[in-house]
Image (tube, rainbow, N blue to C red; front, side, top):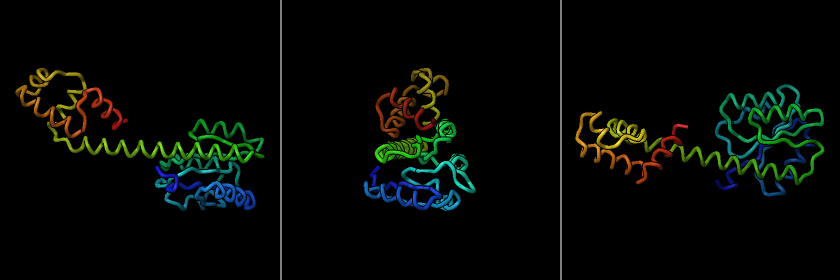
Length: 203
């Protein structure tokens, strides 16, 4: 994914801190958006966002922790970096167990934050590419006829053509034709790769 398509979202209730963060990130060439509260961030279509989220763990109203849990419930896979105070480290560790990418402790070195943002954006790009790949595989599987799908299932279970023919009460030649069409539609000549593709599509 082109980094130009990604945005670093900053949710921080302290205006001075938020502006400082946005300035730092923009100076590094990142596209950014800032929010003063968790509620204002939730006005976005969060499921469709590309990039990462730099999130203050303690905020009035909905806290950063609560926002993170809400995003997980909404199916938002945006990588999250928590900004924490000294007393929030245990909380940030707990957040990482729930799926946050990392946390940076105040006062932090700018280089540390930028390195974490870089890693989070790379993770986001990898996740989006994996989702696109999975969707392509699902579309290939959906292109199979019911009979082709039935035979593919038996193929990936390790059944030989002769066994499939007996089980389905069809000729071995018919099985070979369907098998060839399955491999063609799935875009592979390898049974091992076919198994990997089906597992990836269904994971």
